Image (cartoon, rainbow, N blue to C red):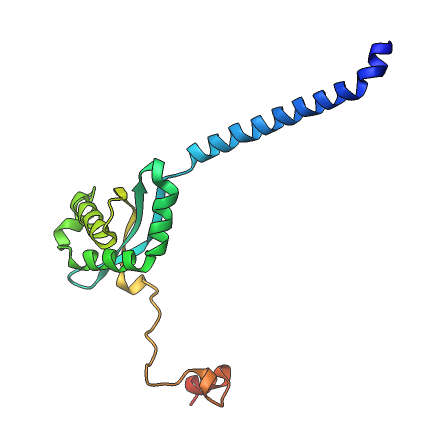
Length: 172
């Protein structure tokens, strides 16, 4: 009993250190699992390609697959050059022949997008291009907003409130 009275504080400290080590070890192992389980697919947007007869619009959702070992650096690079990549992909989609859109797998389009992105970024970070949500939408059902009149000043710079001006335009 004298031994317990003499070393109970030391035993308590050792127990606390061991429990702390177990908790830290568990948290680190879970963090490694989460890091490994993170996706290496980076979405870059939804794109629309108009048909030759201008009656249909094809919607494509594009993702880039990157090397899992360099996922965070690749994601940062893609995020840093988001609008450059967006422009490059739109340009390639506008230049595609309509016959290529009839391919169910879109292999040629994916290859062209991958090459264009690598040329624009001057890095080979993209391992694969993924295209999903391919939908053909009739132009009549496509809810594109009406283009603004570029000559008309914004409501911020006019003396009339925007709501009042819109009502006057509807009921002249």
